[in-house]
Image (cartoon, rainbow, N blue to C red; front, side):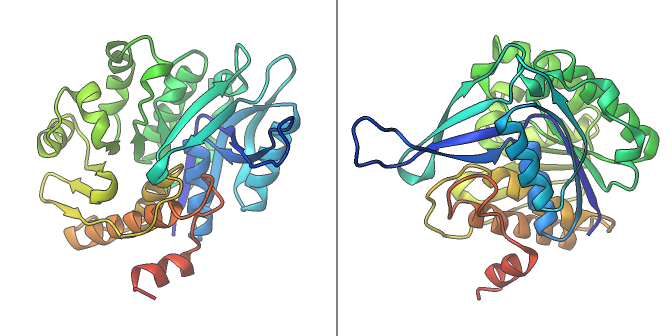
Length: 315
């Protein structure tokens, strides 16, 4: 099933629990962060997986590393940052239908922002089928240069880049500032994933086919656009299509897009990208994303390969 290497942010997602006492507000910590979620999803689907990132030398950093290692993710390229730098926390509020809002608590700088080019080595990328990243580490230095270092090494090694844009407007000065930083990586990426609500701020259109053509004309080989409850759209220069969503009761959509991407990439690792293969890979992705919506947290509900096979087969 290949090897997926992902780099970038990792956080501890904090969920509020119920309490019968007015003077208490209990919480449950769950590991998260899009690239870290991708590695765990890939590992559960029996792919090799490695994560490149940074956490604090603190309680939550210990927790995240323990969780990743328990899933079989290679964490040898994770940097530990000394206090007062801390692992970032994201407080998660769940709305009806599983939609979420996040409130971030971060030191300045946060641990994940200190990921540096020196943390990205040729050794951890060797043998990878894909190198995955998103836009959040592009917000600041030195993590921005770490992403470019990974892109340079991937190009030298012939490893395709898989860019999940994951645009979070509130973290940027403006959408225009984000586009200026994101654009050079769009031009270097072989697989590009966006959600349909990211098309207007990133590409200036809300038309999926137009957006895909724009990215394919810039050099992408495969464009994936997640459509939420409507499934997913895919396009190459030769073909395009849509895969419908699996109908499930969504309680928490956190990590669903990461599950979608990981399952799609694992199916595309090492094989030909003909239309049948790509469509089936996207079908696996939509299935994994649906399962991820059925439980709380980004990593906990992620399916194993056998669970995903049974789900897709209707069993």
